[in-house]
Image (cartoon, rainbow, N blue to C red; front, side):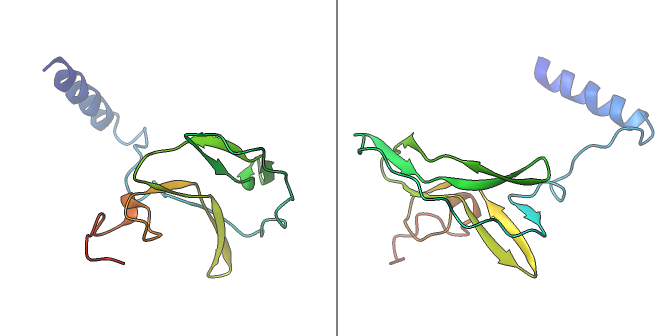
Length: 124
């Protein structure tokens, strides 16, 4: 109940500010990053020996500070029943979209948070 009261008081103060503050909406929150500059070719990196209970997340470029920055590969803790989808860049309408690494439960290649029917037992 206390959290609700705090939330309502914050909301009331934002509305009374007369638009002085911008509140992000779901339309502003985007799952990917879009840039006009294509990423450089991936770097070659040596994968360390396998680690039990971990999945290798390969190195990739991220967009930081107005340019591409190489992020070295690393092991991430495995999640039983999930497949790891590494970060990737895709060209879309002449721009480049970055999608961060995701976990996918039904192994269909669509991360569960973007899947209309996650865990569909009839899917191949």
